[in-house]
Length: 376
Image (cartoon, rainbow, N blue to C red; front, side, top):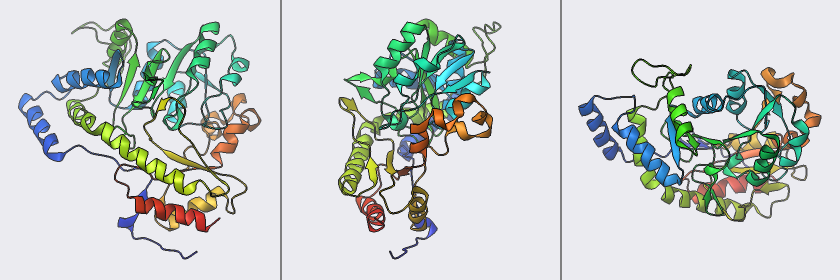
């Protein structure tokens, strides 16, 4: 096909952050300037934490400066040690959080449709050193929380969900964040809900919330009392004020994302060799990503299609390629053997996440699909 290369200012990225109204944000900044309270549980922080818990339908939530520190702290909160069963099909921060805690990741395979941790593979990976399961709600599609929970109960394991993609996702009208012992969110700029950088831990009881709050503030439980070897992972007042404003528009922006996703599905449905993910039954999605999977019946290999889109100014991403298990830090683990994770190994070589964000024009989606269709 004709190569319609675009200028740099016409490049379409896989994601584009949504920002709050600048005038409203300036008003919040003026308040912060007047108060001269920038961090350490200020008024905006307390208000954001309260409003966020209400919005998400969770009992307790603790704000963090970013999602990775939240995940590292979640493992510390539950005193996780030894081995943790997790997925190789995720962003590398999932496993890095284990590594920073001196925990050995044990990779198991994923389900062939949505790429979530496969519950049927968990039991065979459990050893006397296993203390927890760390699944990921990949692309915001909920894991099989019922089966994961049953296995955890039988073997006395903790469950921490990496819910970085799953902001405000519900299953049977229940927030997905309420499953497991803890759920960890990311508010990075690329996420459906962002505070520029940021994150949070969701828990189910006040005592756990208190321990989390101690850990993220150096372990301080008072002016001169340190109860644990904590770190500095607090969210500041500017991020909190920004986040409060973001809550106002989230539901409307999700509807726009849904419109984009449905338009993609409609246009892609008849292209041989291209698989899309359909909505899960009884799930309220946030449409955080739009992955396609390129199989052998498509004329181009995945990387060739990825390059072709890029040549035409469409910068998708191969989330998640390569697998975490292929990085040098983890490659030597016995569970990293590709024979142990064949489905994940297949998906990582097929996936391209196409651009999706609220102000993406339908005409751009049509351009993207035309490139894909004309190469088929």
